[in-house]
Length: 455
Image 1: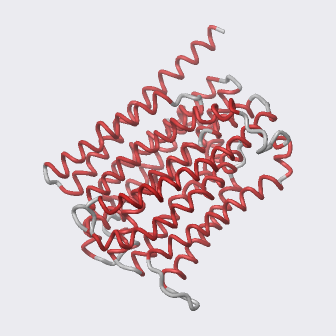
Image 2: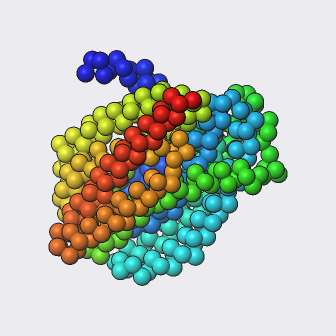
Image 3: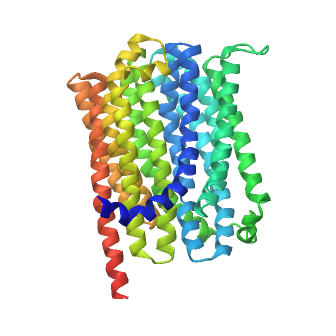
C-alpha cells in the first residue's frame, strides 16, 4: 500500500487541487434542486414535494442534455492549451457560446411544447400534476441562462481555472435558497407561492450566475491571450462540428442515465404520492454525491486532455487511475454515511414519517450503488478527455436502456417488489456501466502506449 500511495501521490495532490473547486461547482447544479426539495418539503407539504419529484425527473433529462453539449468544449480547450494553441481556445469559446445559446432555446421549446403537454398523460396524481406545471415552466426558461453560464464555466475549467465558477455557484445557491424561502412562504408582503416559488428563485439565480460568469471571463486579464480570437460574428462550421462531435455523444451518455432514473420516477409515481416523495428524498441525496463524483470526473477530463494534447500517455494513465482511486474512496465514505444514518437523513427533507420509512430503505440501496455510480462517471470523464465518446455512449445505452430500467420494471412492477425493486434494477445498470467503461479505459490506454513505443 505504501508503494502504491507513493506511486500515485503526486497525481492525488494535483488532481484534488483541480477537482475540489469543480466538485463544489458541479454540486451547485444539484443543490439548486435539493434546496427546492427541502424548502417545499418543509413549507409546502408532501403533495408539492411529490410535484418537485415529478418535475425534476423530467427536467433532469433536458438539463443533462444541455450540460452534455456544453462538455464538448472542455476536452478540446484542455487539449489545445496542452499544445499551447491559445488562439484556438478563443475560437472554441465563440462557437461554444453560440452552440449553447441555440441549444438552450431548443431545449426550452422542447419543455414548453413537449413536456408540459405530456405531463397530464403520465398516470400521475392529478393534484401533483397541478402543482408541477407552473414549477416546470420556470425551470424551462432557466435552461437558457444555465447554458450560457456553462459555456464560460467549461472554458475556464478547461484551462485549469476552477475556483471562480465555484465561488459564483456558491453565491448563486445562497441567493436561490433565500429567494426560495421568501417566495414559498410568502414573506415581506409577497403572497405564498408554494412550489412555484422555488421555480422562480431558480430562474433568477441562473440569470445572475450567467451574467457573473461572463463578466469574469471578459474582465479578467488572465484570459486576454485566449480571447484575442473571440468573436460571435465569426462562427466557424468546422469548429462547431468539433464541439458537437464530443458534446452530442456526451449529452446522450447523460441522457440515457437520466432517462433510466426519470423512467423509474414515473413508474414509482404510479404507486402514489408517498413512494414518489420518498424516491425524491433518496434520489436527491444520491444526486448530491453523484454531482460531487461528476466534479472529480470533470477534473479527470481536464488532466487527461492536457496529457493527451502533449502526448504524455504514461502520465495520462497514472493520473486517470489516481482519479479512480479518489472517487472510489469518496463514494465508499458516502455509502457508509447513507447506510449508518439512513433512518435520520430523510428528516432533512420532510417530517412525514411514512415518507421517511420508505426513503430510509432506499438510502441503503443508494449506499451500494454509489460505488458503481462514481466509477462509471469518472470512467466517462477520462475517456472524454481522450476524445473517446462514441463507444462509451453505446455502453451507457446498454447499461441503462437494456439492463437498468427493464430489470427495475421486472423486479418492481412484475414481481411486485415496489420501489425497492426498481432501485435494484438501477443499481445493476450502474454496475454494468462501471465495469464496461473500466475495460474500455484499459484497452484504450494500452493502445496509446503501444503507439507511443512504436513512434
